[in-house]
Image (cartoon, rainbow, N blue to C red; front, side, top):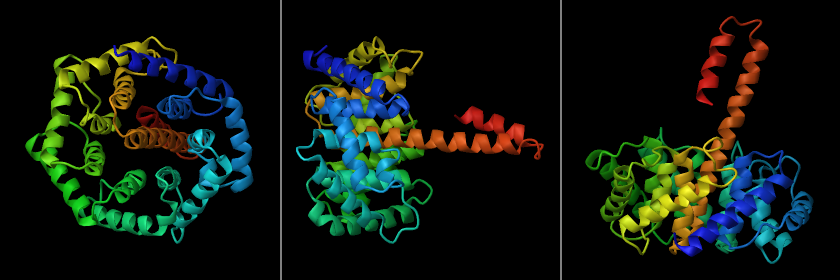
Length: 342
């Protein structure tokens, strides 16, 4: 394994362990996200600085702010890595207010979109970027109403941050989606394919060539007896298309990183399945081989937030069903269905 890649694996483990010990009440997935953010910056997680940043966050945001909900550890990590945490959160908070202004419901993905704008240093262009993102979202809803949801919010903002026109972005997404589904016939969920197409549309280059590269990587994993995930994991393949190594070497590196992660606490078979490990290994490989970490990080964080939010909703529904079971005969059946979908 590439030495730098092995170092990334070790740093990720160290960061995740340190953060989870400090924030053990949080969902472990979010500790992993925070660990990844520090590892991406080649930094060890500083839990004392995270604690200081939490005080700054609380001082600058309301108790019920989405900046202090699911994404809190993500935002604290970003603050901790910034030169001026207070200035950073003030910028994020200001942009976040502009994003949800006039909307009926706020969500964690809006918070992540605000983080993206500030991470790119484009907070002064926030209104224009938000307007562009709204145009993209409107057209995506028109073309793929069932597949487009709040989970796309942060990806759409990444698309808005590119220099591509709205029409070009929609054309690239539609072309990639049609090619992957109809011509390549990839066996992945429609949501995952759309997410991948959004990631591919962020970069420049021939759409079909990018899709062919993804399919080639995906098939190579299968040929090695290591089938890549076809749900949220599938999206991360978009981070590997510009790797400056051949496909066989690329896949070998991912599999070696996955095997290394399997030895680490938090990634063992009893704690995480192989498809998820391969997803995180792919992210680490992409970083080591010079990919755009903002795109990779967004894919991982957005998927993690989606998982955590879904778990919370499922738990809330399950509790409600249990409370109602005495009065509603079908409550136990519904509860079983919910348990199966967890």
